[in-house]
View 1 (tube, rainbow, N blue to C red):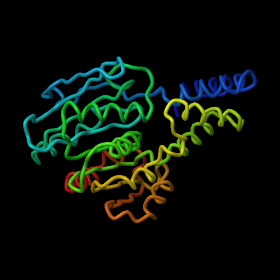
View 2: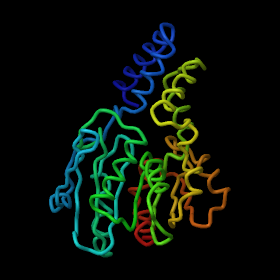
View 3: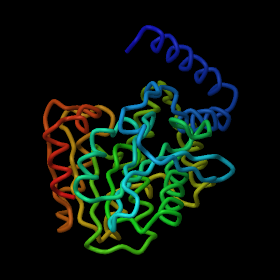
Length: 281
């Protein structure tokens, strides 16, 4: 962690300590806002293949969402979905291999990411974006989803018509929202249980569901698609322990690949993993 980041986190911790004293509800509201804000994003760049892309744009909840399309007109379509604080350009290495397999490839910067508008995002909003992409540019044959996109895609798949012929690749997906919230509270050193209760109440007020409902393990019971799930033992963002709980359910439509030493981000950049993904699709 860089010195500037350490200073910023230290300041935020002090701020939440004071907020907790003033108001548990206010502390929870600010914590939720921070939880939904991608403070650290990948630096914008334009890999060469993006210069050949068709630019796409649509409006979602009053925000402009920008994306890209390659190989329009091919019968099967593939949607690439990036994680929290990331952007579509980070998955440039997958585009040409997918084109070579005959796919029309779609990739979008989620709200509050990349070239799209917005300051915050949550799983429901990301899921709404995926639904809008399907409505505008679908039907979609296959999906690649990393990290935060994994939970958002699982919520979408529960609602839309799909079959065993749909293929999904989940790379280090955010499996349990409860775990993500626990991690955020630990990082911020918020130990007050009343703040956590208010935080969970906010999630329920905004979505109509409790925090634990936002779970790939729960959603997978309603998903028919063939799934390739790739996770690393040393992932410190989306812990393997949550993925192993899904694995223990022995879903017949999921194949797991457990790696070692690739962490949360190197895993999708690894050439062997990329080949596994392309072959599965």
